[in-house]
Image (cartoon, rainbow, N blue to C red; front, side, top):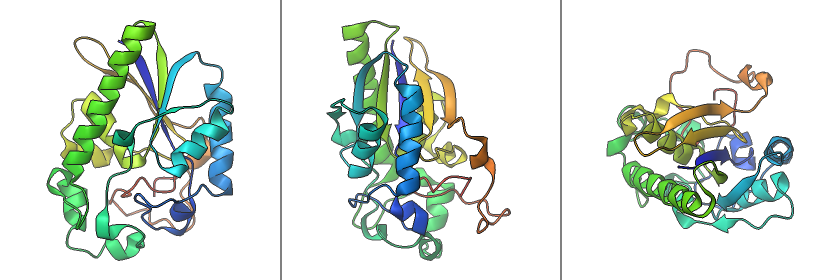
Length: 227
């Protein structure tokens, strides 16, 4: 089976301000654009057999900046989780909602008001990646590499599945902006080859506003640096 590189989009204006972007047409900020260009410096060295992206503008722009001149396939099943009424609201405010502990500790039971269930997001994203991986393998062989550009929670769900983890454990995984996580699928099991790779050790330094004692996961993926 082929190997997929899961690229998260670069930092957005919503990431920078601490809002949950959801499916809104949020753009990359200057930092996010630079992140996408740096990711492209590594990706352009690879013989990618296919490139697939979420339909949201932040993912399409990330691909355009990373791999200029390439026209990716668009797959709606790789889009962001539908956060419903949570979209556009500050994460600090959302952390006070009764649903927040469920999202953190039991996400398989979380259903966003007027939105999507996290379990449904996980199921459709995993199915999409496995479907694309089978298609790429059939067309280009088991040694092929391909890229999927998506969102933090979506990538975390795909990685959790590859690691054999229940969705309730997926908040232990981090997918920073413009990071690459790599999964090689085989007939018997997936192998997680790389996780949250940015080749940038500076991202390990928490920003000044971070709370070192905070144990909650960043819903929507966060802005990097562990927050």
